[in-house]
Image 1 (cartoon, rainbow, N blue to C red):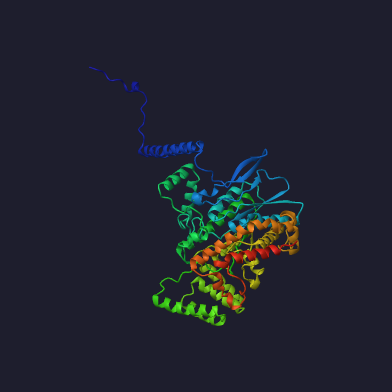
Image 2 (cartoon, rainbow, N blue to C red):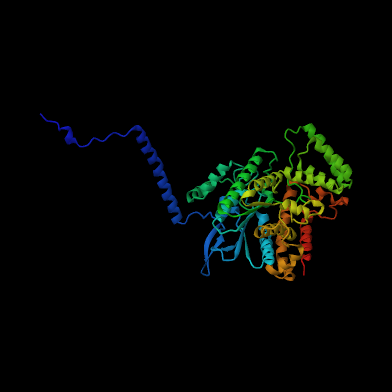
Length: 541
């Protein structure tokens, strides 16, 4: 008979894993192993050179010196690759030279200086500051891009925390409705929740996410089928009411992104000039109009009859009669953006300036194609500036300043090429506003007291933009392209509404808009060429 070994000879007894520890072990294994596999795949894709960098700046060595240059694929996370926008080419010293005051300018195409960034607000600002304070080397780094919005500007700002900035200027808000993740965008999902947007952008920052997006596009599951850039006309089938839930969500997303931009500046210890955004009110009719919800057939018939009577009176030059008809139509449905614009035209012709400005602003806010920063956007900007006033943020009210510099106190074609892009004089006036704020921060003075007067304008040209007599000649080759692009933008509004800006203004009447040829339709190119030619002739020298 076999004898069993004594207990002491069997070795130490291992206690059985508790159920709790066993489940914890399984959870760690189930989480860690996939993460390790994903990490290995991400590393392999990067080593293989697949995908693209997502930072705004890329390091570069030029003539043996370290610089940062713009990443021409930065826009791939926000646009389909076929129509992705690219930053304006620039280089910036990786190590800021001694005696340099570096200003970062954030925004979209209006801040960039479209149609010609070399004569945008950033260049004017740099020239003004250098001319006024020759002992300091001012460097204005313009990170603005065409078609982007706050969803793209936030990661740029976070990156600029590490780029030795002395001051940030934020002039953004025009593309919140139609840009990436906006309520009327054509580039992908429309106004998702902010956390969804950020999760999507974080995924696209990985090579795995980029590979999956590329495979989805090849399989025909791409979110956007647009193969070429079509300008404003791309958006005509994506009209959004002013009170649509998706539009309100876009405003909330803008507020959240702006808050995080200001937090990024505070964490870097950088002061901020936060600006409202100006737009063309007087000479840019709404791009699309929608009637109020639940607009019955009978109501629409009555409204249309009154409205057409007003149009006829306006065309005949009887603004008082037209105003009466449009006011009656507004009692039936006041939410039609074009109606508000016509009300503004009539009020202006009758010199009721306060009422005209109110109507033009309502026309902009009711516009179903939100290409302009509207009232809610500027209110969000002002509120954010007020909340952060004690942490280095000051407000520059560009909308008010440019209105004050405009005839009748209403912004129009005197300062704008079309809906939002500033002409030479508009960019100069905006730069003066910013220059006063910069000087006030540097020298603890009140804005407006540092001598940035109109008499400095010739010096600006001589210091930074070349001798002014040569400037007009340098610009002439670019004018044709600028005219064509500006006319295309205005024509997009005509294509949506089927009418020209001239007809909206009723210029035949001889009122305040008389003699100003429409900027869309067959006369649009001629009008734009004439307008730019007048600006060129106005340059001193």
